[in-house]
Image 1: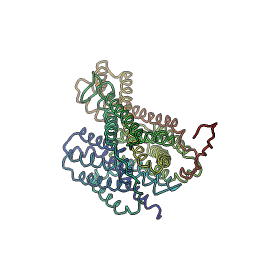
Image 2: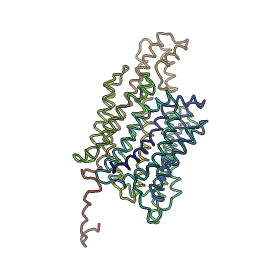
Image 3: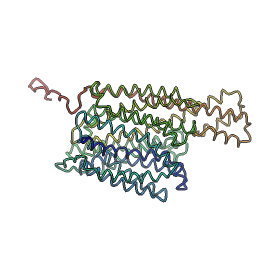
Image 4: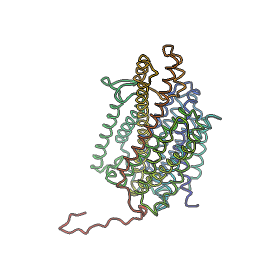
Length: 544
C-alpha cells in the first residue's frame, strides 16, 4: 500500500481536473437562473475554459522543465484552488468566467503536464502501467460521474458546493504532497520561448474556438456568426488562421533548435513513432468519448425526458467498467502487448457503439442500454490502461514534461473536435431525416411541407418533441392533424439523427486502427526492453 500513496495523490488531482467541467455542463440551466443571463453566456464561459487549457498546456509543460515538476504541480494546484474559491462565491457571470474559465484553466494547464511527468518518475515497469491506467480511468470516471454528482448537487443543494469541495480537495492534496517523490532540479534551467508560447497559444485557441463555435456559426453557410468572410461563415477561415500560426510556430521552433536555443517543444519528438502513434490514438479516444457523451445525454434527457441526476445514474456503468478495465492494464500486459490491448479496446468500442445504435429507440430498454454502456466503458478502459504509459515511457526523463504537455493538448483537442464534429453531424442528420419524413408523409399538405422546409433551412435545434408540439399548436395556420404528423416526423428524425451520430463515433473508432501500427508490440514494460543493437561501424558501412 505504501508504494501507491503517490498514485492516490496524483489520481485525486486527475479526477479533480475533469470533474468540474462535467458538473458545469449539467448545471447550465441553473446557472442561467442564478446569474440572470442567457444560455449562450454560460456556454461561452465553458468554451473559454477549454480554450485556456488548450492554449497554455504546452507552456505549462515547459514551465515544469524550467522550475521543476513538483513545484509547478504545487503552483498549479494553488492557482486552481484560488479559481475554485472565486467560482464558489461568484456574484456575476463575469466573475464566474474569471474564476473558473481563466484562473482554473491556467491552473489545470500547469497541473496536468507536471502530473503526467511525476507519475512517470514515481513508478517504473508494470507499476507505471498500473499508475497510468488508474489515471486514465479516473479521468474517464470523472467525465461520467460529473453529471451524476452535478445533477444531484444542483437539484437538491447548489452547484457552488462542488467548487467548495474542490478547494477542500486541493488542500488535502497539498497536505499529502510529501507522498509524491520530488524530481531532481534541472542541471541548467532552460529558457522560456515567449514568442513560441504566444504563437502556439494563439494557434491552438483559434482552432478550438472555431471548432466549438461551428454549430452556431456554421462551417461554410452562415447560421448565426458574429461576422462573415466574403459571404461565408468564419469557421473555416479561423481554423485556417490557427493552422497558419501553428505553422509559424513550427518554423520558429526549428530555427531556435538549429541555433542551439531552448524550444518550447522539440519537434524531434514527433520522429518518435510510439509517441506519435500514442498521441494520435489519445486524440481519437477523446474525440470518441466526448462525442458519445454529447449524444447520449441528449438521448436520455431530450428524448427520454430524464433529469440530470437520472441521466448520471444511466451513465454509471461506463464509470465502473472503465475504472476496472483501466486498473487491469498491468495484468493484461503479461498476456498481450500494448498494441494488442489497444486494438482489442477499439474492437470492443466498435461493438459497443453498434450495440448502442441497436438499443437507441423511443422506449428506453434499461438492461440493454446498461449493457451497451458497460461495454463502452470496457473499451475506453482498455485504451486508458495503455495510452498514458505509452506516451510517457516512449521518451526519456528530460522530455517527460514536454510529452505531458503534448499528451494533454492532444486530449483537449480531441475532446473539442469530437464534441463539435459529432454535434454538427447530429444536427445535419436530424435535418436530413426530418426533411425525408415530411416529404413522404401523406398527412401533410404542400403548404405545410413548404413552411416546414423553410424552417429546416433556417436551422434546427435538438429540443424535446413536446416543445415542438407546443410551438406548432400556437400556429393557427397549421391544422391539428398536420401538427401531430410533424411532431411524429420530428421525433422519428431525432432517433435517426442520434443513431447517425453514434455510427460516426463507430467510424472514428474503426479509422483509429490505422494509427496503432507503431504502438509497442513487446509485452515487457518500455523501460525494461532491450535497447536496439548498434552496428559496429566499418569503412564499408554508414555510421549509425
